[in-house]
Image 1 (cartoon, rainbow, N blue to C red):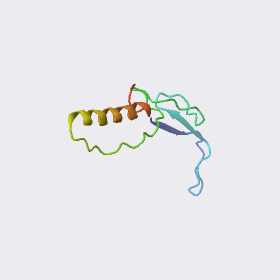
Image 2 (cartoon, rainbow, N blue to C red):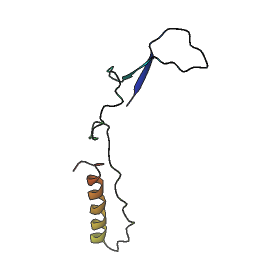
Image 3 (tube, one colour):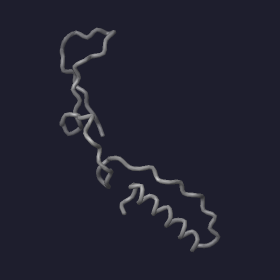
Image 4 (spheres, rainbow, N blue to C red):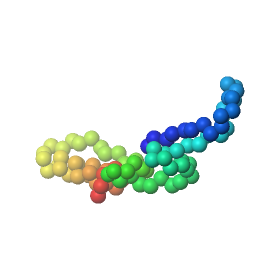
Length: 85
């Protein structure tokens, strides 16, 4: 997400002060709203996701065990919202 800042006042700035009149805009030109809720991420939209639980290192001795470990990883990614269910 890109946010653009535009200085609204044209008065001479004092280098010891931070400008007080500042307007923030989103990439699409709409005003930035810091209190707007951020939605969940989708495959095309950035958003909020959860951290997934740890996945232990695999010690699989055969393909069936590796398949079980891999499916556990996929399930955790889906549950955390990092991957489409």
